[in-house]
Length: 238
Image (cartoon, rainbow, N blue to C red):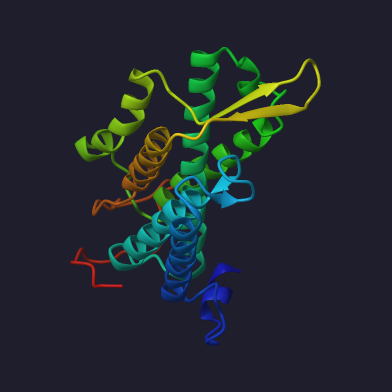
């Protein structure tokens, strides 16, 4: 089925048009960046400070575009397979940050409900975590050999420092009684929001770094050859 999608040569076949996928991601990130600048540092889709921040769309859009470009240029993974891997790994990086935030908020503020089923997002976190894991496994199946190196650790420094300084917040959600109603206290602080953005940025690209490698597997699980074997070369521009 995936081969049939990639063989569909229509110019409108977004699923197989790898370059169109990353340009779309860059365009969406650019729009989000414009809105972020125009509406304020802690702005997002909804009430100021307590909604889905524009930084999310900027950071994860850029992560997706980078993964898409690298897998295309270095590993010759294109079309629908590139879309699947890039999306799944990007979604996985969202899960990593959300688990990091949830454990931090639970530990530093005693709000243990954020890492239990009392949190309506708990099951969603489990699902997107599995999506990310399967994205890495599928990339491995396609011949990409994931790696962790010093750059990966370096990218995690902002997240580590945020914990070390006590994990200050601008939003303080609290569960009201035994109900599922969550009340959010917002205290504007641009520096604290910077910690959030830098930690999110670092963790996103640390996750992407797992696949930003020139290492390829000589064989893949099951003894099969990689789907897209290709010589290593310098990636062209976007």
